[in-house]
Length: 417
Image 1 (cartoon, one colour):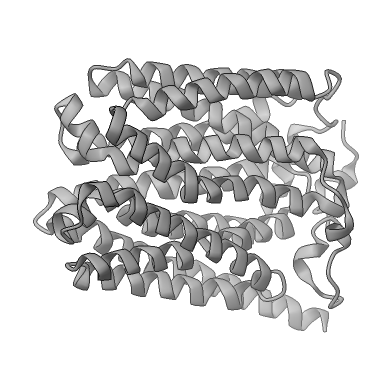
Image 2: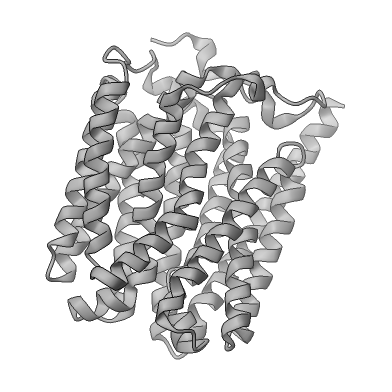
């Protein structure tokens, strides 16, 4: 059982995000253990799985004999599985050995991809995607705790950065490669590859992670007490709206680039590579700027995201213009991610798996909502302009909770000074 004090936010652990003393955290001098890099590599697989479908929607819709918007529900199903899986598995695996939980998560993830690859209809493919997402959710619920515990308090933020970096790298390398593999070898090819790599990763985890690595002593009361901060729920709302804005457009980037902008199908992976490079640059810049001035970073980045989505709606009829706007969207949109994760740690306190799991769920709520409504907009009278217009509305709405959070943050800063 945890002590009463454990229900309070761990402000010392969150200190690297505040920058109140004007000095950098000493985490940069700490060498991260190999297990953190292993988990970052697994996060790369997870990120590739989540987003690779975006580049294969035309192939999947043709193979399964459904519309492109119906094929887009494979993205939604994965997001819903993550949304449910992360918080549920965070609680369900509290008392399980972490090594066993991670191995099981990877095997479920692999099995889901096998089911999807063997599917001859959309329904079975959706079941496979949902199962893979549950494995992904379990990985994040357990892996985040393993990584931060292995790194220690001085480097826990860096450890989470490695895991988040795995997803960003997936957008740069994994998704374009998976899209190219799907175009050359059939849409099932990346699913088979991900299943095989997940099984290999499970074997490595079973060998490398200590057998006696068990859950830290905690309680449901301690985990839920961290959720009583109203500002935390505003952060979750902002996360969901920002992600919905990005994914409403990006989920349908392939038809946008080919059917509206006139780009050749074979060049789509390169455009997605550009999006990933933009995302990596945005994540890096956002992480550096957001440490000290979180809302002075979040609000401009979100406003630029909204402006880019509006520009895509109006002007993405030329292949060069469309690709440039997609790359910039990756940069502006992903600049928010390290900052909002930092705000969750700052408000809830470090070491709390449930608040972090709910942050993962908030990302997935945004992805599911954005991809679904993007598909609805695509099939409406708006046509190919619909997804980016829906994204613009979401990004604009995200400025409201961010504005409230910024006002609350300034008030708290004034009270301390």
